[in-house]
Length: 334
Image (cartoon, rainbow, N blue to C red; front, side, top):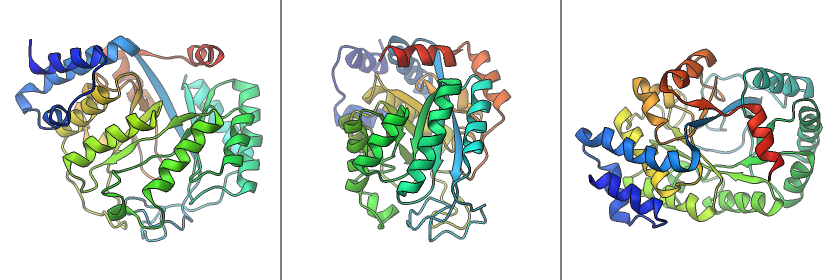
């Protein structure tokens, strides 16, 4: 038995990795990468079988953000030539849900730029969510920034199933990425989400000049936060942002990162998210032997690959898309 299978068995027995074992995954020799992904799949298979969850983003509000996040084209310090607009109307939000439903997307994600939502914006999202739930009954995730407890309660009552607020990087690296809010601000929002009864979604962006130890700390922090869904983004450096031109990643390292997150968070939804096309490139299919979820279509201000290509990839791999009806059944059973 190779060392990766031994580590997988340890995880399946309910044990946590040591820091040294976690580091060994990120430093896995290239000759061992298939063995590592096979071991990751043993963990994935136990908890998720061959099912893949599909997610789609609606960029409900673009740009106009006062924060200074170094990776983001929508921040106050970005010169990226992006489209900027206030919150789209309710009809646009509902139409986006219709398209997601027709593509058999399990989770529809309403994302808005900004430090946090105004109460007027909460009213707007609540109204749209109620209509989407009444019409399609699909799973809805909101990502609106830092959240107040009373706002979280309103979203929960309207039918929002999940709220996303990423920690993005490690506590140690946070000030290198942004200074307009703290790492604790982000953690507190995730705790607010949990207190409201919504499912917490929180993830990371890898490739922002962090160390391997930072990546390990991120995975362990999300384990401690008990995030149900963990989007793993790989930096797609955008011209006009402070991280313009940064390219520290390669496809094999991205696979190691996905494997690490599966080993440390074995029962959680691990989602391959932004930047997968430009960083995993031709190795995208291998990522799904560790992850069990992907975003389909475009992201916020960067393009993904065509929906049909994502579906072809899943069929070619022999994976099964978790249908909207299955998602509804799981929500009814909660």
